[in-house]
Length: 361
Ligand SMILES: [Zn+2]
Image 1 (cartoon, helix red, strand yellow):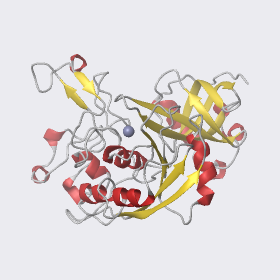
Image 2 (cartoon, rainbow, N blue to C red; image 1 turned 180 degrees about the horizontal axis):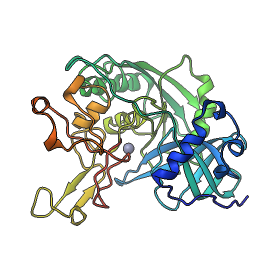
Image 3 (cartoon, protein in one colour; image 1 turned 90 degrees about the vertical axis):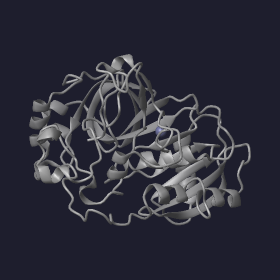
Image 4 (cartoon, rainbow, N blue to C red; image 1 turned 180 degrees about the vertical axis):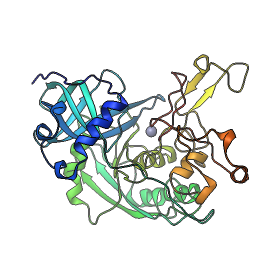
């Protein structure tokens, strides 16, 4: 089905405000898009699900799906010609050619505003509240047996654990205790990279419910180019699924679940002749360049802003400053006495190649 985009690809803030006013009225929330806003005519409407695939060569690829609710319920792969800057949970209307029944070559899309931002949180300067989470490590025989036994997986992931639970305990200063189980092995022979099919088939076999499902391929699936892939969530709305291509390294185990909770890759920027030059486009960026944090290429502590984002720093150890607020030099003197975590704002990723520094907003 080919449909014509009713709005340009990039929608300005003013247009979004108008659209938000139209769809935010409670009486209209469950109405069909055509009944709410002519601008969404012919659009496929649903909620975005993003996944980030971590490739062995040090690159990554972001994949976009639409869990469509209108005109019919479907899970559709979205193919964009340029990075759309969307995140899991975004509600959008999308236009384009349907390909193969379950894909859309996107010719245009529009963001439908969701609920308001997190807002502000008040808490003690130290003593951030505990944030325990549960996970299950699911061993799946995809056709080549498993390179880990359940006992090995338990000792790697949970107790005594050296590659997952203890790392989260350490990087969260004891605030995020991850507990769980190893289950399997289950059988799901794979010839293509149908990791979502694996989840759908195996999940009913899992005993109990968990906040994170770590789907582990017991042998390497060559059709999957990545070492690990994680569904991207955010701090207030974590996602639950991650997949591992026969790899139990600390970085990949911690990082994919980290993506579930909204952390992005920790990159570095190497500039010739200076720590940081005026024109950063002359610098060389490395997506996984930070060798300290599991969100880069290490297994140690998180960046300060990631620790703040995860809720591991209490109170005013971290302060969110938006673009509309006064600059750093204009803060009241009393606040200058507090330790702060430097943090940029904007879209949801670091884009150093373009010379811009963005972190999730
Ligand atoms: Zn990653």
